[in-house]
Length: 148
Image 1: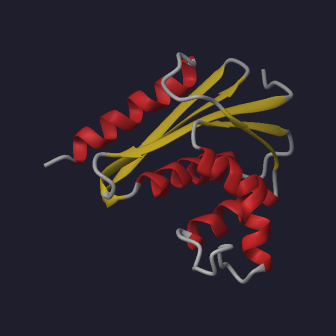
Image 2 (image 1 turned 180 degrees about the vertical axis):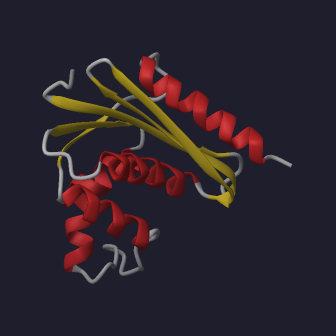
């Protein structure tokens, strides 16, 4: 049975920055538990963090219930909650007048989240949160597949 809200935990990382990377999400909806992961042979940590959330929200689709997203990335949490509005107003330039890195990913994330009822939460990484730890484990597995 579906609950009133969907919980999504996300993580991303890479070995070296840039280097082989992985992303993962765990979606919890009542008794339903879904895990997805993937990666890239040469990427950055921030790209993988963003990709994890994008993949999770794309998986959810046009859900009408509230979605609670938990990330251990302040970059993702602050970026989508606050910074993105300033970047848009400033023509996708930072306060230092430099182009926003990962603009395409930020635009995709905003497009997905604008159509959903998303609440963003930051959780401390590697601090014992069960689902954050599971995401990290999946990310580590994805990175191991890509290390040469």
